[in-house]
Amino acid sequence: MPKKTIDAVNHPPHYTAHPSGIEAIQITEHYNFCMGNAIKYIWRAGLKGDAVQDLEKAAWYLNREIARIKSEGKKS
Image 1 (spheres, one colour):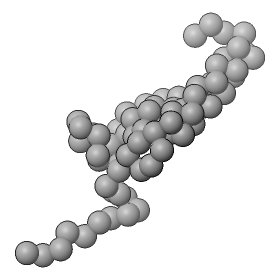
Image 2 (cartoon, one colour; image 1 turned 180 degrees about the vertical axis):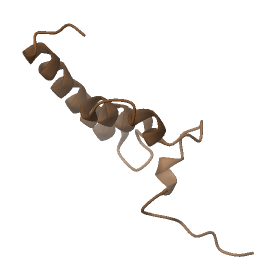
Image 3 (cartoon, helix red, strand yellow; image 1 turned 30 degrees about the vertical axis):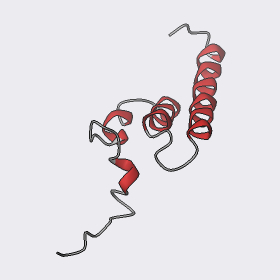
Image 4 (cartoon, one colour; image 1 turned 90 degrees about the vertical axis):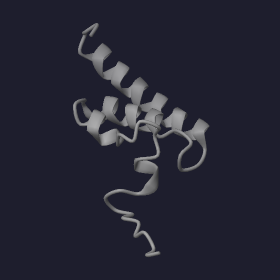
């Protein structure tokens, strides 16, 4: 049986490990940078290592987005 080649650049295993089979980028590309990154870290939390660290990274991006919105005087 031929060995399956892993594409570590375009499709590493953790990119499609979500139970839906959807890659995070298919969702995140519809959001701004901070929101997209927060979603990405939540989507893939624990698939590459420490889930808590991934969620802390997501929180960091969410807090940055909240600060940006507040600085613009917006509520949404």
